Image 1 (cartoon, protein in one colour):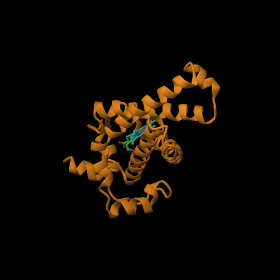
Image 2 (cartoon, rainbow, N blue to C red):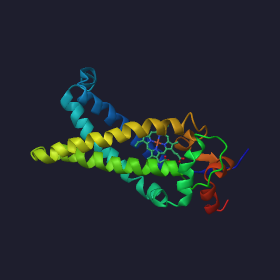
Image 3 (spheres, protein in one colour):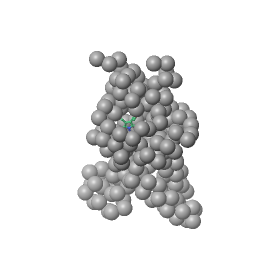
Image 4 (tube, rainbow, N blue to C red):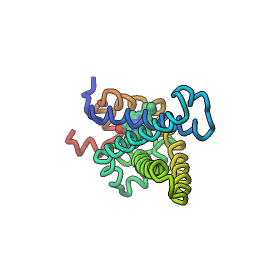
Length: 200
Ligand code: HEM
């Protein structure tokens, strides 16, 4: 059996699930407000209770998002020609068996995904706080509604793709968010640059 190496710590695993579950709750409750889903309001007692929960779970979401920064942002911003090549070749998803440049602890697609989630996540949080805390500033609230909805569209496009790529499309990836470990050989194939840096 191949040697196992750690890709995510216990803290990162728990934080990812807080991020994912808070994000899904916010999306669902956001839909309930947008489309007046009375049944969902009823599950939580009333529209007002659901709104309070939406606001405070928004706080949990942004804290959890900020907790990912030290782990992912330095590697996501470390862009080079290799990332252009990887993206130009569609990460090997479009034409199979193309040769791809070695990847860091996250690949070029994951770097873009992370930057999109961080950017849209900060935008959706700041605009949400304006709507929540400054209801009297009408023009700010109007602009914030626009930004809240635009950033939600980014989430709605990116997250289903992320879940698909992290499960069905790439067997062995999901265990990172459960056990935190991957086989060394699995990681060598997908994250060669990282594996070399780690001294394996
Ligand atoms: C329940 C569905 C989800 C599954 C199965 C899942 C799975 C994963 C896995 C396996 C990784 C680690 C990838 C790696 O290290 O190579 C990861 C990373 C990440 N996840 Fe999720 N995730 C889910 C939902 C979400 C949601 C809703 C968000 C929204 C904020 C999110 C945000 C992230 C981010 C920002 C990363 C780091 C970048 C990356 O590795 O792609 N995840 N996820």
